Image 1 (cartoon, one colour):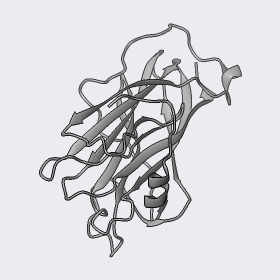
Image 2 (image 1 turned 135 degrees about the vertical axis):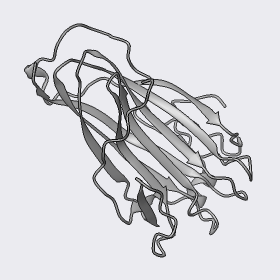
Image 3 (image 1 turned 45 degrees about the vertical axis):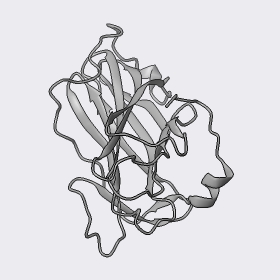
Image 4 (image 1 turned 60 degrees about the vertical axis):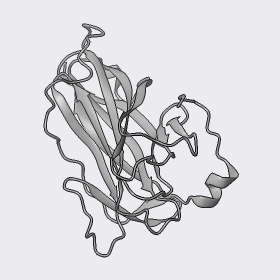
Length: 225
């Protein structure tokens, strides 16, 4: 499926979708460091500059792919969501295997800088009664120091959270309010840092799968160089 920077919202998509609101959420925590970070390439030897505090960074779209399982092309709306987001509105093609989509963004970090990274995260299941309890998204910040969790969200029927996933917050009510998440990241060295999104759709009968990240922003808030 080709990636696209356009945002073609069809009448069918509008009819079958509403936007998920947070029923409960928690402060993000640090995730276990991964063995081989995605972003370890040095981009500059320069340290941070206090004059850059409060300045938004340039964020670049990296790559995305279906890293496990198979997606249908029924909606053809899996890909970049504008310039600072990503969404997957296509459905799992399998009733026996998870479908996992991984997408990345990057930014240039400078040694000694503290960055605030924020985004809105939404997971939903259209209007299907069998759609709850099946979708999740994990967002982490990957550098040479390891991986730090920004957000982990899972759909739920909220009755009361029988389907919770460890380390995930739960969303289960619907309206037009996205759920914001943010975390601070301290750059130990000057390098390219990766923001990684992993969307998982559990196997089930055909439902309307809607998961997306939007409003991604990175700003330097402190310099300790």
